[in-house]
Each structure stands twice: as C-alpha cells, then as structure tokens.
Image 1 (cartoon, rainbow, N blue to C red):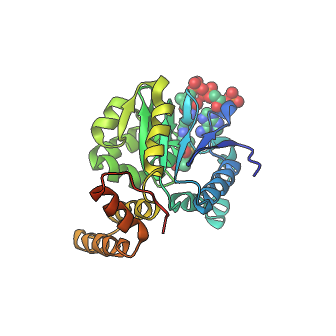
Image 2: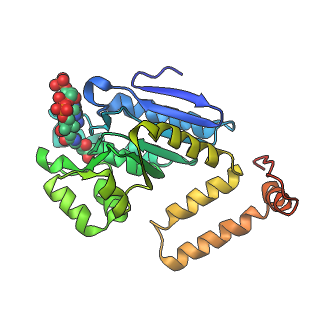
Length: 257
Ligand code: CAA
C-alpha cells in the first residue's frame, strides 16, 4: 500500500506508523486521515500483526488539525461533510494502538493521541487543546476524552486557556501511562507493543474492548459486560493453552482460536 503522509513498517508482530509531514509539524489533513485509516484497517485485518505504535517526530507528534485546510471553510462545508467524522474509524481499531508522543501533541494531535489506547510520552512531550486561540473548540473528541482522562478542572482550564501540559504533569494527571527519556521513547514503545502482541490475540481484543466499555457504561453494566467477555474466553483454545502452560511452567503457545 502506498501512503503519502505516513510511513508504515512491520517489525515482527508490531506495526509502526510514523506521521510524516515534517513541513507542517505533522498537521492532520484529509490525506493523513485517509492514510491512517487505511493503515489501521490493514493492521486490524492482518492476523500476523498484534499491536500498533503511532508516533511522530522529535519536534511534533502532531501540531493539530491542518489549520490551512480548514480556514476558508464555512458552516455548510463543515456540517455538510460532517468534518472530522472520519476519525471515528481510527478510534474503532480493534487491536491495541499505542501513541508514542514526543514534542507537540496539540489540538487534533492531542486528540489523536487520546484516540489511541494509551500514551507513552517522551520527557519533551507537550499536550494542549489550543483551539480556543483560533476562535473554535476541539473537534476530534478532545473536550470529551481529555475530561475523561484528567478530570473537569484541568480539562476545562486547558480548553479555556489553551495552555500546554508538559509530560510530567500529563503523567501526574493520568493523561499518559509513562514518561520516558526522549531518546528511549521509540524503543520502549516498540518493546511494550511486542509484549502486547505476544499475548493471546482474542484475550487482547477482549481486554481492550472491556476497558473501553468503562467509558460508555454504568459500573453495573460494565462489570456484567466484563464477566460475559470473560466467560466467552472459556470457549477458546487459547484459554485452555494459557492455563495448561501456567500449570506446566512454560510459555503459552497461542493459536488465536
Ligand atoms: N496546521 C497547519 N500548519 C501548521 C500547523 C497546523 N495545525 N501547525 C504548524 N503548522 C505549520 C506552520 O504553519 C509552519 O509552516 P510554514 O513554515 O509554511 O509557515 C510549520 O508548520 C512550522 O510551524 P511553526 O513555524 O509555527 O513552528 P514553531 O516551532 O514556531 O511553533 C507550534 C510550533 C507552537 C506547534 C506552532 O506551530 C503552533 O502553534 N501550531 C498550531 C497549533 C494549533 O493551534 N493546533 C490546533 C489546530 S485546530 C485543531 O486541531 C482542531 C481540532 O480539534 C481537531
């Protein structure tokens, strides 16, 4: 597959996707969306792939939606085309996706990182929703996902002032899973992805699905949903294999069945 704005590389069972519009600090235009969605559909469909890492450059994960692409649009263009709706497909990727963020993750860049399953941040990372400075609001889910991640006070302050959060504050606030020295970010993210990709594939899907359910369901419904998925895994060969491997003190040999 030919991509114009991203680089895609398979490393064993890990797909590495690198945003590659350096001249625009990886600003997210329609082509980036099309490329990312195509890459994620291919990743999901490939039984040889178990986890993806999405990253940018040392300076910018992504500096937001492409302001130059949007600036002349009117309401009818935006509403009529349901602008940004295409990102819902990225967020529907079934296998795990890790965001490895160095430098700026602003506006749509922060929102793309939050659409991934978790964020590993370089100590150089800076997160923000600066849309207010452009006379608009987040439009790719930032007002919702940031509030879920860091709570109302910080999300409201960031959206209303446009201030950036550094990596240390982002970790303290629950936005990122871990902060890593910048020169080790990619290695660490790839190793983490390899660990995930080495697990039983159906259990990986189920774990992702049930954690995400926590954002859509009441506690009672979510616990019930978890239990049903847990029960369902007892219909898989990999559950038998995983538990036999534990008893026999050996690693599991997964079939994805
Ligand atoms: N869209 C389009 N182009 C962008 C861009 C964006 N979001 N961010 C940076 N660029 C371009 C710049 O225009 C510049 O291009 P030229 O060389 O052709 O002028 C190039 O990238 C380098 O940027 P700077 O010269 O500005 O680099 P800097 O180091 O001085 O500043 C920065 C870096 C602070 C990130 C600054 O670029 C910036 O503030 N960018 C915009 C951030 C922003 O407002 N993001 C939100 C966008 S709206 C959005 O995302 C809506 C949504 O919810 C989805």
